[in-house]
Length: 118
Ligand SMILES: [Zn+2]
Image (tube, rainbow, N blue to C red; front, side, top):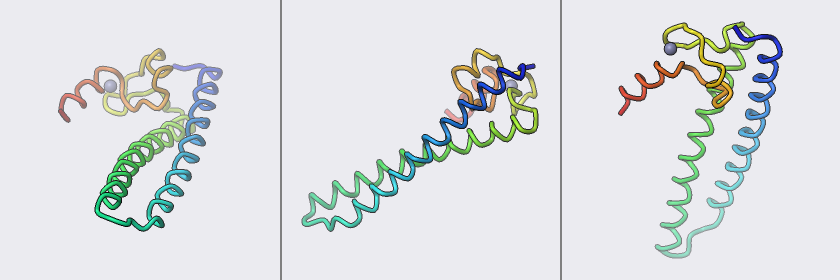
């Protein structure tokens, strides 16, 4: 099990990431509004606005997903279940958590899940 100090470090890291993503998302919605306010003048302009918007949407989706994972991890810290794989209930390797603090699964489950998706 993780000790208190480790948990505290992970928690700080998660909270830092959360704030960063939230401010990224705020900035992105501002940019999207600016894009929308700039009326396209011709076909070319219109296409580039569309491209910009769908790229921004994809990036935002990723950030939103990451934010959700971070929040799940913070909740697990509260519940005392942080660092436990969502799929098999085994402990997630600390080295893995250091690389990916908001990991839901241990390495073997992650591989299975990614394999199923592919
Ligand atoms: Zn697992």
